[in-house]
Structures are given as C-alpha cells and as structure tokens.
Image 1: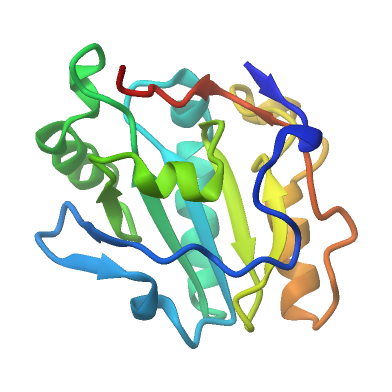
Image 2 (image 1 turned 135 degrees about the vertical axis):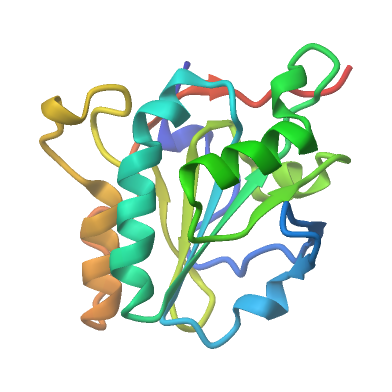
Amino acid sequence: MIAEPSQFRLPQGARPPPFKLPGVDGKTWSLDDFRGASALVVVFSCNHCPYVQGTEDRLIAAAREYGARGVRFVLVNSNETVNYPTDDVPHMVERARQKGYPFPYLRDESQDVARAYGALVTPHFFVFDRDLRLAYQGAFDDSPKDPSAVQRNFLRDALEDILSGKRPAADRAPVQGCSVKWAV
C-alpha cells in the first residue's frame, strides 16, 4: 500500500499525541520520557511486514548514529494480533532481542495511539523537532525493500536539517508498506 501525503492526518507543526505504552523491556514509556531530545522519531512498525523488515537494519543503524547526536527513536506496534499473531508481545520481545534494538519497542494494544497519530502503514515515520513540533512525516527512504536501490533517504535528510536548525526541505514523503492491521 502507498499512502500519499494528502492522506496524512497529523498536520505539520503539530505536537505529538501523548502516549503511555508498555515496552518489550518491561517498562511503561510515555512521551515525557523523550523530552529534551534534539529530535524524536516515532515509527509505527510491526514484526511481520516485509517493508518493515526491509528497512529495519537501516533504521537500527540510523538510531545508533543519530542517538549519539541526541535524537531519540521509539517504535510502536499497533497491529491486531488475532490475524497477525507474530505481532504479539512475545514475538516483539524476541524480535527486539534478536535485532538488538537500540530503542524502545512499544505495544499499542488499544490502537488509540496509532489513531491519534494517523498511522497508515508500517513503517510510518513521524519526526518531531527539539520543540516537539512535527517536522517530517513519511517514509524512511525511497526503497523500503531494497537498500541497494535507495536514491533518497528522507529520514536522514530531515534529521540533518533539524539538527542544523532548519526546517526539513522535504517535510512529507509518501509511505509504502503494509496497512496498519486494525481490529474489527
């Protein structure tokens, strides 16, 4: 599924909707845990989607690189698990351990957080600046399944602009991925 920026619901400049969600690390995380970051990247993700899997190693590398510059990352899995059992908490714990996630991986069982942000697909990236204003929304890059075909890295470009004190040149980019799996 491809979602165009015209479908995005959270407007540029908006504050991140608050959340309080359990993480795979056993801790409950809230938006307050990320205040003071030079930027905050909220990613709606999951375990099963090939677009997430295709981007995952690049996301981990970016989190390690930009973490050293004060950028915080958090992944949120909002998928229903009746039809997608590999997106349940035990599988999330295993995935985070297996991949060595350098960021919290949170479970949005009610799907309220995904609705508040307007998450459309996995992965869907929301980048907030130092003042916690939405500065970029969209895709990680232009080739979520094939790293060798990447020509534009939207997330890295947005983070570089934010860290340089500028508004991102591209503040929105279409997202391609698996639709968020909503409960019936």
